[in-house]
Length: 214
Image (tube, rainbow, N blue to C red):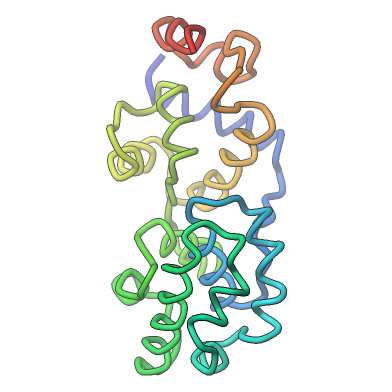
């Protein structure tokens, strides 16, 4: 089956399972979403949602964030992975936003902010500003390879492949739908591909054999 045919079938399954796609990170502005996504690197959304309410009570705008010492920020987010680095980046990012006249939905602008890479910028652009983007993290990368949608060796290559498979109008929603499906039905380990609604027909026999050896 061609990748485009697989993609169409997968999109139909995901739309049936997840017609609504709420953003799993709690936020209420472009800035709070940016902060939450930045904090989510190498940790779970659940953990981020446990930490951000306290952080946002003190600093839910760049103007409030710069008033906090880095040590104070670190203490608030200490349960999150890479807390020392993220605390420094939050402070610097707030300073950059203020100096530049405010947060803007522009690719180059967002990707130049401290602690904000392409994936984080993609989430903010797609989920807040409504700009077509396909944020690919390690989880989506894993599923795309398992489903035979890419042979990409990294998330950048996988992102390019997925953008070729699905039309732009589906990107923003599919990103979340794939994440939801992975969490509920398609875990990285101890997964029976032959019984999975997507893996059972999309994964190659080679992939199934490799997964069974784990």
